[in-house]
Image 1: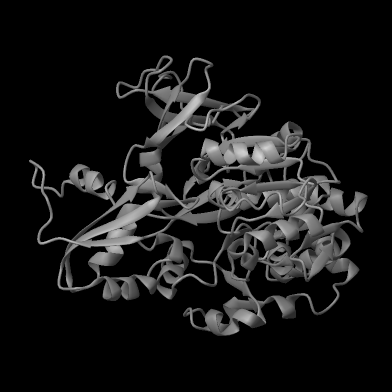
Image 2: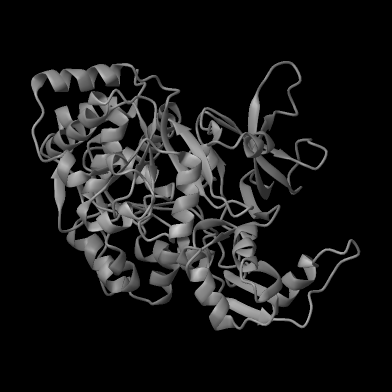
Length: 507
């Protein structure tokens, strides 16, 4: 029985030492090399007697970042990814919540790391950590730390958008990742011959499938350079040249490739598994892919970060009309889905309700935020006999006549945009910090996947965009700006979001 991700790692390093563990196309680490680097990193924390503490990792997506994750895990601590491209303000908010014991960075990001207000001794550099060999005694000490890990210990904390402008840290345990990785490996047939082509940023939980399915199976993980996603033909060439056979991408990327009609211009018959999640997959573009790769397995996965990547899946095994919604399917193994109406009753076929989840996949809650935790992780209303938590996703779904779950949209102001979960309130909070904006409201045009900002005040679009670029990541910047003489109000005196949403759909 496995009780920590580290056991997966050591097993794969033992069985497949020369297999490529991780590569970005330029730099690669075998399992043997990845293990050696991870042990050196773990040793630094073991020597400091640091255990079950948060460690931030701020290294660009690379083999070094994966080595840092594994080193932190081996030491019995847990990591949190800091995107070095995030605005300073957002990084500082994350660090304020996380309060890390240390941050692992590298020489490339030294200047950024030194600007974060941490004590100099709290900043560790990857190049220094892996420079020297560790002794046999130190290796034993690292193994002793590993042996103290239990499956309910934290593996990572991933920060998502927060409605108050403060990101929320989702706490995921070893047990949850083991359960998810076992399910994914068995369902999609992953093994040591699998070659993953990673698209998701490492702070986005879709990357968890790529990283830990590879680690579990002794498979190879290719971190596809971001540049490739700006030039889709290069993206397909990267897949072809590295014989990638499994991808887990957001639908936006798959759709763009389909829309450009380039699948016939580059042979990607190496692809055996095409998985997607993070937003709605348009059936028309899916059908383009299926026609080009008739022998590949296509699967639509669904789940918020709070339930360890995915809680439902749909293996596409029938014809789907271009105007049909691609189902999000059925529950993953060891996961129960409750679709509840406003009276907390289970819905019937065709009835809409909120998708709620129970099972070992549930996060422990939000880091250092008991109020948000208690609001989202609640007692199962169908069980009054003992404590049993469920997670209320805020997503509205229904069952079709085949008893497949169909996604209908968000219950509140949290939206899916370009594969990222975004709280519209966080954007509004950032806009409100501009003194020249009086009122604002951000809505999502789901038909075109546009973020539309309505505002009143003296600021112009260019000024607001410049203001936001220092506060929010690029994927949270509005796509359209509409200046109004005054905001429409509803009967309660609140901004009429329904009316503004209707206006956004006209754009």
